[in-house]
Image 1 (spheres, rainbow, N blue to C red):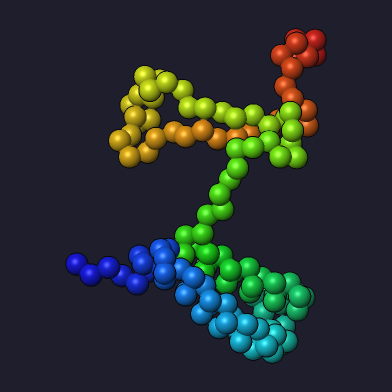
Image 2 (cartoon, one colour):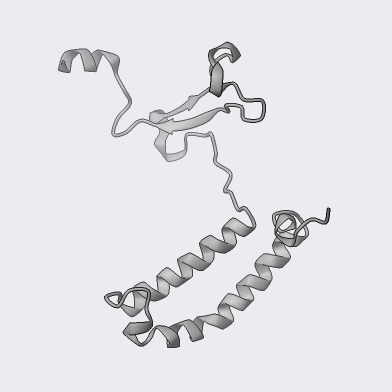
Amino acid sequence: MAASVYSLLPYQPFKPIYVLIVSLFTLARLPLWLLSLLPRSLRQHPSYSLKQAFILQLVKTFTYHSSVVRHSPGWSLQPGSEKERFERIVPSTKGVYLGVLDDKDIKPVEIGGTWFPTVYDPGDAKRKT
């Protein structure tokens, strides 16, 4: 069975070629979008301003092409600007995941989270209740 073009796009060397072609094509379409969005009746919603309609068109295009190449930013597990409010959450032991949670393909991974507005203090919760 032959692979579809869309299944090859997330991989090298097809991804950067696709991104370059789409970027150039989108740049060429910008003036046409502006002209086509001038009449209020042709906007996504007649109450949208020209700026809103134009930005919405850009966001829709970016979202579509990002999903085609399966763009996923790498999330860091380093605290960064959160400092002491950042926590790393590791998966539990294997025996905890039973039933529908015990999947052969999907496995839990370490994630990060940020306490907001401050770090949780168990003693503080007892004082407030």
